[in-house]
Image 1 (cartoon, rainbow, N blue to C red):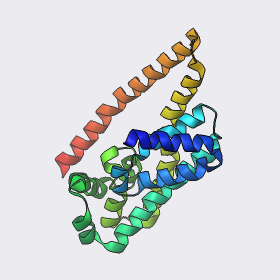
Image 2: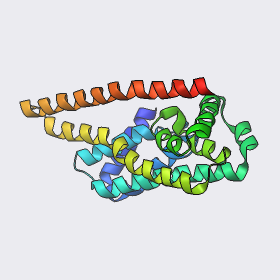
Image 3: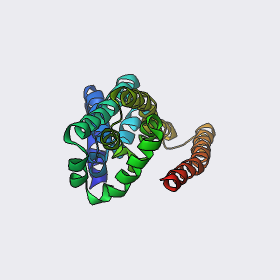
Length: 214
């Protein structure tokens, strides 16, 4: 179902490129707004937007800026919602699947503050509850918003890049891929694997230290 939905959206945007930036803004907003990102396949849709960039169908800069803006406003809305509603109401309304991530996120926020907001955008379970945890723990607006904006400016190209690379490769492979294209594909795969291998132990170690200190 989600795959069909993603394909339909990507096909529509590819045929109506003037709507690429607004569509990306909405997708990024939903990806960053608390809890909604769990039920909406926003990441897959953003990968599809990246593929349209890589294939040359849409202009990259408006889409990139729209992605960053959507991420910023989505997190900001979640933060202000938590400040407005209060911690008790947030806890009562959270889905059961978010309880563990929420509890862990609030612990992380009390320990790391600004960095928890910045890093939380890039970690799947935390991303869905990061703005809520920041609002509930009483994090001040200025530190939250600076971390929110800076992390979104990094996150936008990072989340669009895999799709863009895939779209670029798919366009150039054609029916008879050249040796140069295949070598580039292998190089990208190796770089992604090395990056994942380096980041995974760091994130695991950070999570372990946080749990042990709580």
